[in-house]
Length: 134
Image: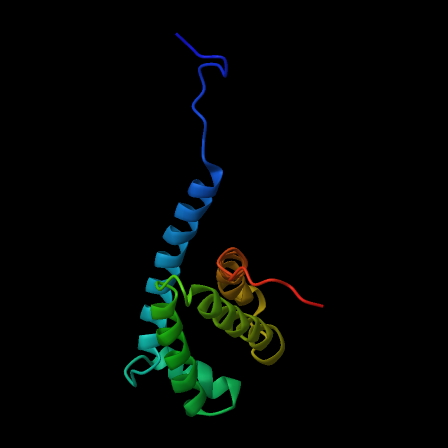
């Protein structure tokens, strides 16, 4: 027999949101570890050619790859996940600007835009609860 609340089960939405963020964090950590590590290989001609087109130099490929690998690991650590998501979000904003204004490759910015939205949500939800002082 149903109680006064009806036949429905109460859902703890904070727990659902937390679990969803952890799944997304694990997915993005794997993506950034994979793509970041691939930037270190000279055999992946795509990255070498792409960073040559950007024009800053191949050192920037190594810097970006290192940042993605380190932040990919930090996404999985609760105390560092917010800062990792923030750093990766800044990286994705930079990638969007590069695609739009330097490479002029049309809709390729979407591949950076989708992770950016998830990273902003992770950074916002995982931020520390410091008291705000003005």
